[in-house]
Each structure stands twice: as C-alpha cells, then as structure tokens.
Length: 241
Image (cartoon, rainbow, N blue to C red; front, side, top):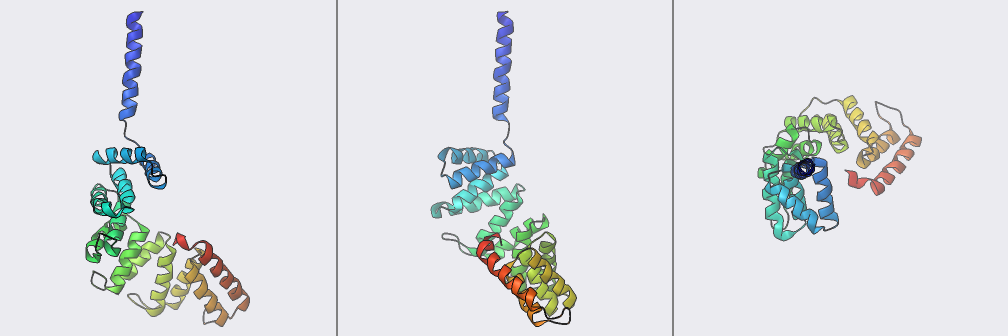
C-alpha cells in the first residue's frame, strides 16, 4: 500500500513539473505583456525576461514593447525586436520598422534600415507594414521612389482591410500614379474607405457628393450626413487609424 501511495505521489509531482515546464501560448504571453506594461508588474516583467531568454519570439516582442517606454532601454528594445522578427514574429518585424523609420530618443531615424523589416512583415500579410512601406516608396524615403510599387503595396494593404490605404489608393487611381487613371475605381475606393469609417475619406466623399460629378448627381442631403459622420469619427475613432 505504501509503495502504491509513493508511486501516486511521484506521478502527481512529475505531472505538475511537466505542466510548469510547458511553454505558454502566444495569447498567454501577450496577457503577461499587457500586465507588465499597464500595471508596471515586476513579476510579469520577470516572466517576460525568462521567456525571452528561452528564445520565445512573442515574449521577446512583448519585452521589447515594454522597453520602448524606457529611454535607457530602447537599444535593448531594438535588439529584442530584431531577435523576435528573425524568429518569425511578424508584429516584431513591423515594430522594428517603426522604431527605425521614425526614430525615438536614443535611436536615430534610419528609414533605409526600416524598409526590409516592413517588407518582411508585408510579405506575411501585415496591413500596416504594407501601408508604411508604400508611403516610403511613394515618397522616396530611404528607398527609391516607385509609383507602381507603391500602388501594389497600397492594393495589398487595402485588400487586408486598411482604410487609410483605401483612401490613398483612391487618390492614386484618380491621378493615375503608378496605375492607369480610372475615376470609377478611384470613386469605388473612396466609398470603401468611407464605409470603413476613415474620417478623411468620409469628408472627401461628402465634398464630392455635395458638388456632384460625372459619377453621381449632386446630393446635398447625403453630403450633410457625411460631414456630420466625418466629424464624429474624427473625434471618437481617430486612434483606430
């Protein structure tokens, strides 16, 4: 009987150790990351550090996001973002691109160095990365200017649901920059961006229907509703974009 009890206790102990050694899921790591950042939870930060040391890309990214808020640790944030990106974390590649392109206290802007990381994230269907790279390419910021490539990247971001990209794509089709000029396509993209509640698109659509054009008659009532909608979304939802 004693031998049986000992065997059961040993099995329970080994099972408990096995659970403790199991790797956390990405969602669990992100929850700990939020706790470390929003609540300044030291224990949560230590968990992120331990997981990062085990080369878990999501933990490296979450720790880097935390370090971004601390000027003295932004160089460490860059290293962690790069490690996570090289480990396959798409969001880390985007965040690394953002840090390098914009620059922050302690990190000089380096748009040329940012471009490959944006490209990596865009290749894995990251809408904001495709948009950011499109803007760099469109303006020749750190990379050669290329209207056709910018249009392709905006098309990608738009297809992934990015309303800002839809709005910019509308302008590109209207002006024929890198694509064949197409006023009907431009209007369709403008309508789609407005449907996604992007304030500048709603406002531009309001002005368009207020005056009327070859694609639709003048409609002052709709214009009035759109202007009101644009104002509300600019006030309440701008951070979404």
